[in-house]
Image (cartoon, rainbow, N blue to C red; front, side, top):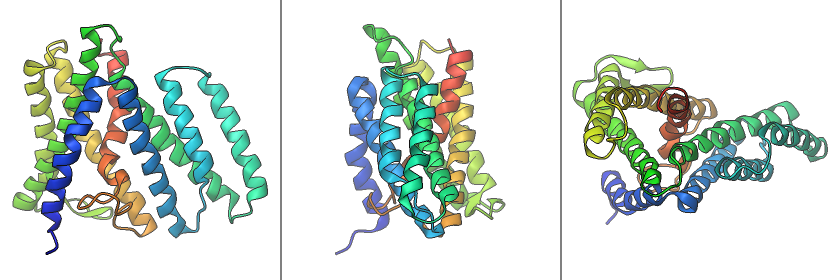
Length: 274
């Protein structure tokens, strides 16, 4: 007997959530490998769906660029400006001999994918590595990262529940016809509630103001990230980025909010959160 989509989602969550939480808690190379995995797969899915627009993004070069981006953010070994110069030079040189349709579209999609997923993905590592790798201080990044995951997941669930029960006013029908303002508001407030609770449970090193602001960032940008990925999928004519995760779609589908939220959180922590 085939399992329902809801049952599949629950089974996958039971299996994957402990793995994600463990990687976030222990950090170091474990979390680096986790972020590398979700970013590389998401980039591959991105390159696959843009083929529907007759775009042939450079998968191999893009993945190489993403790996360098993420590892360099974890342990710096090359100046980022130099890397971007070299990457762009190599990209156009390869396109000169590649002969696969539009150079502008191919190179543009490759750069977009590397920047969107590689650059934004590196900020996920930045959050986990924000606090020094010195004893108990390093655990702070783990607790913060776990809270970010929890807030995004609960925001998504609360938005779905609120929208299904109370949704009457469409949020962005051109991009995602099923999302409502009511659901979005539910998700927004639950994001903040999660951060407030976490402040008193595991994030005692954060001020209440910082916890609330991070909750606001997740409540807004997490949902915007979901809408932006929906925009890409609608433009390319696909429902899911892939069928990789039973009941959940693709890797890009599952982590779109994390990719879009993380750079904003990292910027806030860097300039205001200390």
